[in-house]
Amino acid sequence: MELALQDLRSSESPNISAIARKYGVERSTLSRHFNRKSTTIEEQHENARLLNKQQESTVVEYIRRQCEYCLPPPPSLVAGF
Image (tube, rainbow, N blue to C red; front, side, top):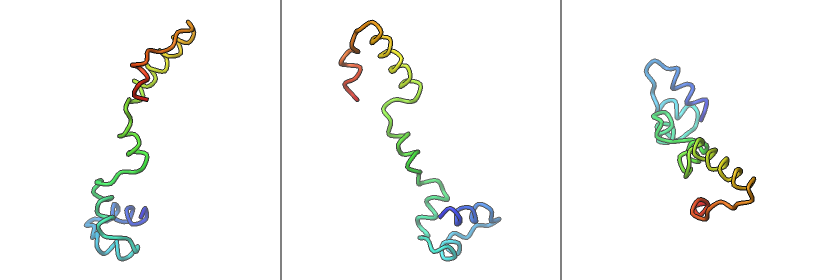
């Protein structure tokens, strides 16, 4: 799949059907990937996150500070996790 995508990107006028046959991949799958309608597993996981990285680090830091004072985090903060 990666070789087919590289070949498509390097072509002046990409022919998805011909390249799909050449590399033995499904034309529809190659088309979706080429047109960025498919995402990688990593992108899917990132899109499914409840918090972005900044929000997550803020919550973690808050919980660490609470633990330093022997205070548990409020249940509403951790209820979604």
